[in-house]
Image 1 (cartoon, rainbow, N blue to C red):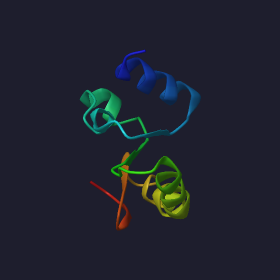
Image 2: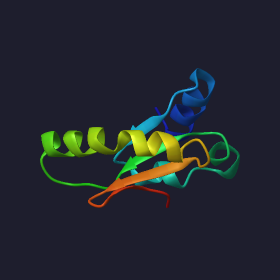
Image 3: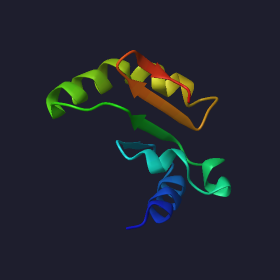
Length: 80
């Protein structure tokens, strides 16, 4: 499935995409206005990444109320 197709489906289902693929932060403009993405800018052990994501997901949810993209990195969750 192409990124644009997944983005369209997430919009239709009113779901947020959680991904390590930075391409989801640079979708075509009509999609970027409607899609919600949490980009995990983390590398390393998958278990550690998952724990860090869970620790910061509440802040990301708050960010996504006003923005379309939230980034989780080593420092926490923030806007791009």
